[in-house]
Length: 235
Image (tube, rainbow, N blue to C red):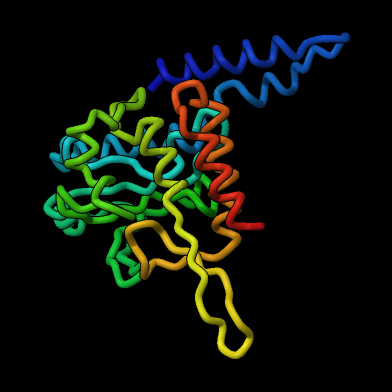
């Protein structure tokens, strides 16, 4: 862990040094940045330790969601897809502030870390090895076979740039009847027609795709196409 803090502090030093212009030394900013690991780094370390303590290998889980954006924003909670047998193993353990909840009729484990912030948590979503969301293209099996998982500095597997982009672009628009008032737009996750989302979620995904473009744009030929497609839904 100290090595990771060193690397992060080195980055904070370099970042602050570039801002020391016009007589503004920014020492207060430097002091606040140093020795202050991000929430995403702390959660990553905790997750890896939880997996190791319970005999769960890096082939049995992955971090999904916006973790791939932690280079430009602090990720305050982790969405972890985990194989069902490993999930059941976790359920038998006493792990801090752990609870079992249901989201869209799916049971998940939520471990909260209030000392890190009100939203700090790790959420575990049980899946079969060949089942993913919104389509099976996002299953552990598929992502592992296609080489679309990479590991962070702590050793946790997560989406690389391609599924990171696709997960936010997977939205379909339909025109459906709106009672006696004609027609209206309806949005759902591609491949999951019953999983409806609203216009605010479409806007959120456009923003996330733009963030992905900032980091991985050179690697993703289709990123502009996906952004323009979602933007066209809002016209």
